[in-house]
Length: 303
Length: 267
Ligand SMILES: Cc1cc2nc3c(=O)[nH]c(=O)nc-3n(C[C@H](O)[C@H](O)[C@H](O)COP(=O)(O)OP(=O)(O)OC[C@H]3O[C@@H](n4cnc5c(N)ncnc54)[C@H](O)[C@@H]3O)c2cc1C
Ligand SMILES: Cc1cc2nc3c(=O)[nH]c(=O)nc-3n(C[C@H](O)[C@H](O)[C@H](O)COP(=O)(O)O)c2cc1C
Ligand code: FES
Image 1 (cartoon, rainbow over the protein chains, first blue to last red):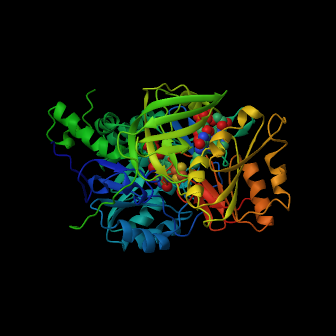
Image 2: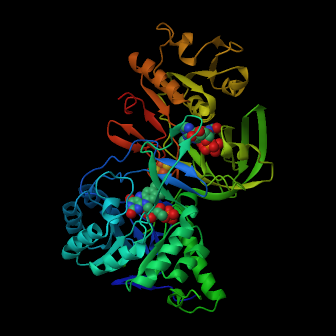
Image 3: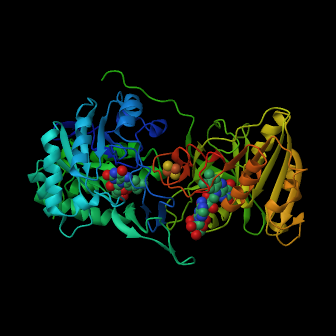
């Protein structure tokens, strides 16, 4: 067995495999499929201050090697999380990382302050890249000054590991990576979904109620790999690689491109046990390649 | 952090083998799979997420209600109506083929009081859960009437099988079987006939809404099983939601069976 532990700022992950926000619920539903204690970390469903009902159905369209979603951050808000969800998940031996969303900087800050107080939420992921909400979300993640402003404001109040999740819907993603690094982020995660669209030709109508949505799955993996690689060259802080990871080989590719850890997203829908399988698969790869420590793979792409 | 815990699961994620494929009429298939392990308890209204094998153009699993279950032989069967690319691939499965199934998923129909009288209304692939429902009725000595609607005779399936559990009525739009017209125009809904303790429905949304309204107006409780599009089927993606009086609920987890008055079907 290779040494699989990786370090993301203050976070010691027992292995580089975590699960992506919005694709694993709050872990509760998944505990019947996966031993959550085995995961490097768990990015739980996007949280907001107040209850959000999300967008209207239909919220999903299957596409070639992927899917579009327009969930729109449906969640019951931080009060509900504190009272009814956190108590059920806090004793798992994995990092619980909250995905923080807001319509304004003040909302991001207020939510962060609440999460600061929860011992077992060991890090937050600032989502400035959700394409499915009208206010906030991706608006913060597609303008460098806004990305800096929200990261700085949250940094001031957040004491633990601060991860900022970048949007791929920009021309030069490395500039955003550098901008949030400068604003105090301890780590970045990328990519969130790519804005896309699906049309029902028979009905001459868009499939999603919101017309456009976020594309995820293997279809976006080449874009995600390229972006992780570009960002890894541009910043010193560790990166969570995300986008279309379906198996251990995909995960290894992200590590080679420069990610220190990865998040498994849409793949959970198809095989709810996949995250555990990826951990085993990474270990097997290390064995096969004589790698004693998974950290040897990070950024080890030979060019 | 010494005291971590694990949840015991009743869910199966397993490779199954096809043991039987029937094609009772064009576009309609009954497919039976054998599980490699003992079956968990499967209730009427539960569904499975079936992986569509060897279909690179089908990315997600597809949800199907259980048609029938044989615990002894570890068999589960489904009624698959071909409507698009995934169902077409599944319909082409042959005995001996393998694919992965996840189940049991979703909630279940609530079985009416013993000795009561119920009406079950379905159309299209919505009739799939009725066999398991019928078995539960029989156990509880419930007097059941099944009403199946279709475009023509070839769409009205399972009538023979359902006769084991109660009276079977039908409607067809072309009049080739049963009463002619839409299912909701059947004479069973006439005030003198519409005397049931509970109504169950599964099928196309407009049909279920109409049946739900008829039941509600007559003061009869009604449960409907929804077939929203799903990405996961086990509660984590929030893609399958339906509006209810308590906000958006996941059809795959809080449903697929809902009391019609809980749903916000009419804005
Ligand atoms: C809980 C549940 C139980 C079900 N039980 C059964 C069953 O027992 N037997 C059965 O035959 N089917 C059942 N279905 C429906 C079945 O899942 C779909 O017919 C199937 O997923 C279609 O896949 P496809 O690849 O063939 O169609 P696609 O190629 O994906 O789609 C073809 C067309 O149908 C539309 N469509 C696809 N799925 C749906 C949907 N769920 N609602 C509305 N429009 C849709 C698409 O938008 C598209 O226009 C059930 C669905 C649910 C949610
Ligand atoms: C249904 C769905 C819901 C999502 N919800 C969130 C969310 O709440 N917050 C967030 O930061 N990302 C969310 N995402 C994006 C994923 O975390 C991930 O960045 C993206 O899907 C790409 O990875 P993948 O291709 O492995 O799925 C969501 C994705 C999907 C498919
Ligand atoms: S289909 Fe994913 S939550 Fe219901």
